[in-house]
Image 1 (spheres, rainbow, N blue to C red):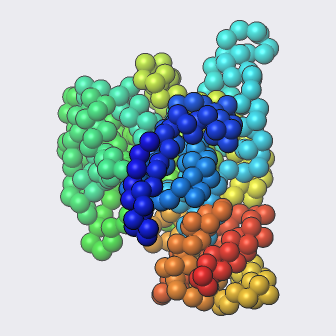
Image 2: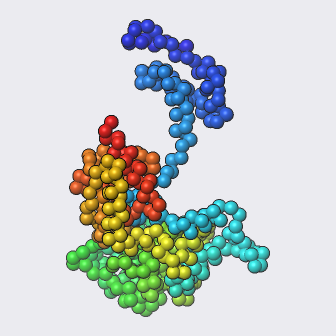
Image 3: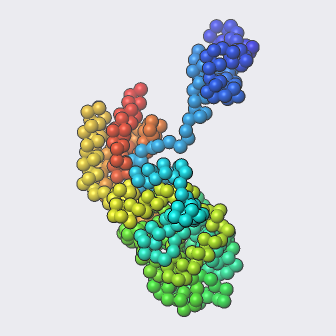
Length: 454
């Protein structure tokens, strides 16, 4: 038994022993749910807060139960993305289509992941999407791994280890999380040969650097930044011809993976006209799950992809069954002309007038709930290191009130709503709010607005 001094009465206050509390029915009922050890720890933590004067014992049981519940609550939560950033890296980039979500149910159980149902023999999981990829992009070979960083690492390791890879200084990018192309090169065992300058690299620079040890030219699409002004980049067609003259591969890390050209973002099909091997992400402009997609063109590309598939590293970076299921569904939607059912595609193409009507509807409904708002012209972003500087016209819903407090209240709500602050106003962009989330969003705004009155 611990004794404290009550500052209000100067009388000692007793704190119960953990064992005594465990014998009380209310606490004993928690043990089958959370386990004996967790309940003991939660009680000890609560007693410690009372001993330090942070809490009293009037709501001890409720506090212990809350601690236990918080300890097992899911960390990964659904949020509503009202930022207007379509491929928001912090929010998981591309949201999956309903078809992809349905496919996850199939992938979660037993499936023919590596079984050829026709012959009854062991199959290859990559074959489940290989045909879809070659059909969609008109290439000759395909391989899928767990992300694009793994795809380019596997490409360089399997095809260029111990040899030289020539790359422009202006394309030595950092692709996020301090993961830099020179680091990938070193890890792969390939020797990086830098040519040109940060802003100007010509085809001749690549050719002049070729040696008997050169395995490939590498093009890295600078999808997350743009260099403007006095610049020059070796054109893909000329670099392709140079690679052929010297008998080396032309590899391209495309990154974003646009199925069709958007703005100045090159499409996968365009890149495949010139490059032997192209890699890109599945969860960016393709609109699927996180994956690294490797495509090969012509006989050289086909043989390169086969070599990569046989490399031991391919096993370490292979795609898992749930990702494969979602990717297959996404590819089928695009291949069958249902790309408009892929959320990323729908968001990219949403007309500003449709967004205006949606924001206006929110404004009317919130006014009925006592929340004052106004419509503001604005712009959305693609995000995810794709199409920097490419803005999509939108109409924002600006909520009256202190922007920072509103934004915080929305983020801490249930479900959390991630807004953005524009010119000292808390704003919601309808472009990235998914279908079916409108009423939930309005309830969250009303709840957040109510906290300001407390």
